[in-house]
Image (cartoon, rainbow, N blue to C red; front, top):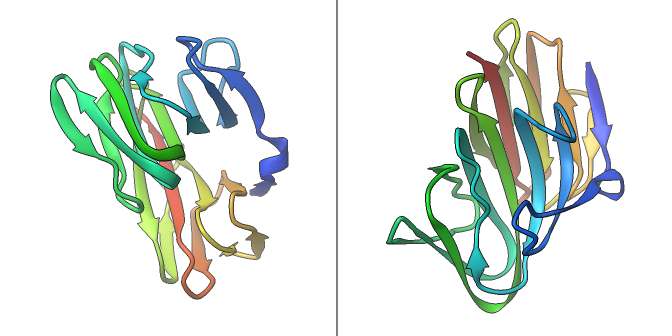
Length: 181
């Protein structure tokens, strides 16, 4: 089953630490999620929220540059290169060149494992029995099987054995697979 989730339908949510806003694409529970996918806007330097027990992946989308300080190590976020880190890590974002937007994936590590793969050419994916996926169109339109989505939109893929992702010329998609443990 494929379901288009237009960016206009993402739910605005305050960051856990109150330092900004995210736009929730999907989660399993709005109050206490065990998995969550959202787009966030980083307007200024500041700490990340503590998500002890979760694994996180962040992907730079657009705007100014962001460098994360993760437990004292400096990590520049590079567009089209997902960066994973534990939710309990001490993370501080340093920004340059104005606000930035990023894609965030979080899964509670004792219940789920996730993978974020960037696709810039036609690709086919096979899902395990209870696995599901979300395809986020990063910088152009993407076709997920027969469902077309514009840049910034997402297609949820559930109860499918396999699916194809075909980005338009020059476009990229983030394919997020979430698997129960």
